[in-house]
Length: 101
Image 1 (cartoon, rainbow, N blue to C red):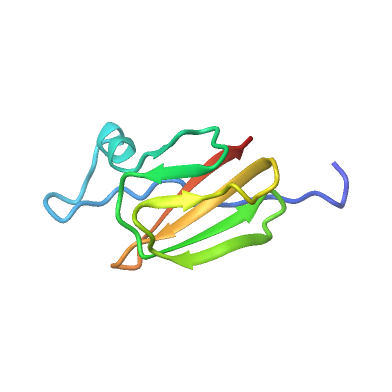
Image 2 (tube, rainbow, N blue to C red; image 1 turned 135 degrees about the vertical axis):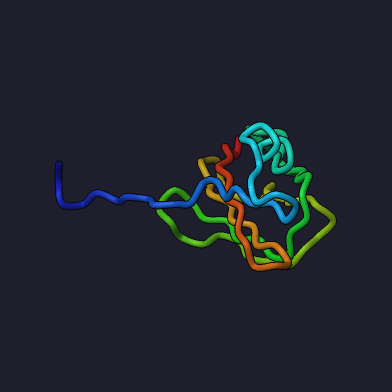
């Protein structure tokens, strides 16, 4: 292993629910989907969020903006793999990985 490696550490899942404190993996994945993936222009998100930040595979922020109708326009991003971090109203975060084609 060389000295120029980049390691990403990210929180992939946050399992919480006000009703009983626990979500099953299937419930969580169902409630936090984004499609299509791979995506070429518009990513549709089926959960509510307040802000979104998009990072490239080097961890450099490419986009950051406020809520916009549960869609994310990635048409101007170059081809590649991106990490998208959504922040909800209660400040919890949801992270997904997409492939921009």
